[in-house]
Amino acid sequence: MFEGLSLDQAPPLSVVMRFFLTLPVFGLLLSLLMIFAPHDVLTLSHPLSLASIHLLFLGVISMGMIGALFQMQSVLGGKPIPNPHGNSLIIHSLFTLGTLSLVCAFAFGISELFIIAGVFLGSAVVYFAQILLPLLFGTITHDTLKGMRLAVIAFALTATLGIVMATSYANGIFGDYHALIRTAHYSLGLIGWVAMLIVYVAFQVIEMFYVTTPYSDWCKHNVGRILAGVLALKVLWLFLNLPFLWLTDMIAVSLLFGFVVTTVKRLQMRKRRVSDVSIWFWKGGVALLGLALMSYSGYLFSDYPSLETVSLIAFALFALSIILGMMGKIVPFLIWFHLSSSGFMDTPIMSNVIPQKRLKITFWLFSATAISALLAPFYAPILILCGLTSTAMFALLLFNLISAKRLYHHTLRYGTKFTFQS
Amino acid sequence: MILEFMRDDHRACDHLYTEAENALADKKIDEAKTLFDAFYRATNHHFDMEERELFITFEKRTGMMGGPTQMMRYEHQQLRSQMESMLTALTQGRYDDFFGIGESFMIMLQQHNMKEEQMLYPMIDRALEGDAEIMIQTLKEMPQ
Image 1: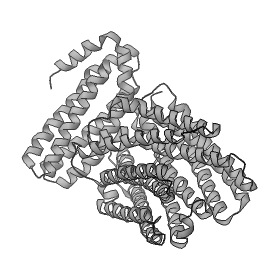
Image 2: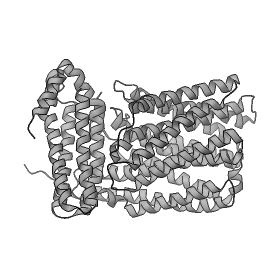
Image 3: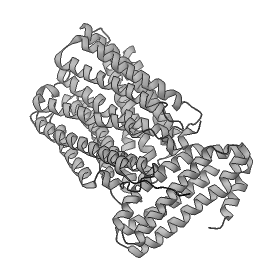
Image 4: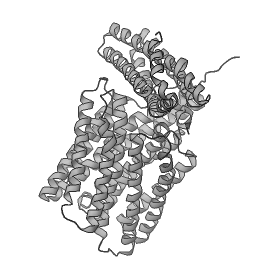
């Protein structure tokens, strides 16, 4: 029941790193698509656009979030994920193969691959949910855990709807409900999975790591419930074809906008003034969420399609910004933690695992990528520049992760351990 | 009850650390040393309150001797060792090292605090039932 209270129960480094190391590889594939097919990537419902969206939301964002959940569960949930090596290997392999199959299915129009993708991705997400949810519904309960539960449930539902859509693509038969299923699929994925998890992680880490005033108890108790309720209503509204569907969207937009305002306020007024790059990523990410919400509201009332594209791009960049910022902190911490817990005297301090200078370069490359991506819906060729900067960003991220892992193994092999003489 | 009292004490310690770190970042060395000393004493006092009173009472009431409290003691040891390293770095004028150790210390301390606030303190509150007020009084009277 209380295994999570032990530092020894943290999952092995390789469990988290296998997800984090795969993330930039998918990011590099996405960058190639942006460089070589900018117009297709920006054309809504074009196969290469769908391939890009899934590379980003599955291969990059969800890959990072699943890896982080393996780590967070042991700290927040009171019980670590059992058999972390085996389970992470199964989930990672299925998820990676599924994402690759889906992207290739879209990119090359191979219908059989949609079935394979559906099987792999569905198995990965359902397997992940069936391991994690019983732990999240255990005896220990608090607001962050409740948020994590809702996020994982939304992820499983997103995957289920994804499988239904994959079979449509495989057969080339799109029923009357295809458009509705697609709307439910991305609403659950974007708001229920991605936004929900990031919001609840923010409730936990912003206050503690940057020493800010706490988020209100009302927010912590109710944001998840309201978002879940709004999503349930939206799906119901969609399938019953009821009017004023935009109302459900506006409730979610208002709530998330409240999150943006309160988070910016907390980050600005934080007591811990020593700045690190993770703060820049949080601030950038929250600003991008604000932009996504504003452009989506603009789209709802104007029907101007570029605003919808800007909204989706800004939302993805918001999630990416938070993930990059947290990885820059989590990876050096985990390496320091695992080495120092094993008693190595020459354990490198965090800033020597991934130097701040390289994290700052990652941030500036991210900023260049974000600006060019947001301008691309208005001038498509700029997506080539976006592809080039994101290639540099993901290559640097991969280099940072590989060099951090090499430092870890080097210290394990050649480091000096504390010895106790009796 | 215990949760609120101990959580407030966590925040008070965080505040002192933040003040010390801010002062050092502003190159106010003497002020940073004074504030870090206050943080060092406050945090050790917090650990002492837990180890000498709170955990022992909890263990007696529940019979859980080698459980979560033992794990928290182990974490206290690690955190104490890091505080010593930071104190040495500050005393020897190795300020970059101070910030470097401080970065991992802060994450570890916050993870430790999360576990206590979300799991252990609610358990202690349940175990103490109506005696929580008396325990808080005892903790308040403990010399620093």
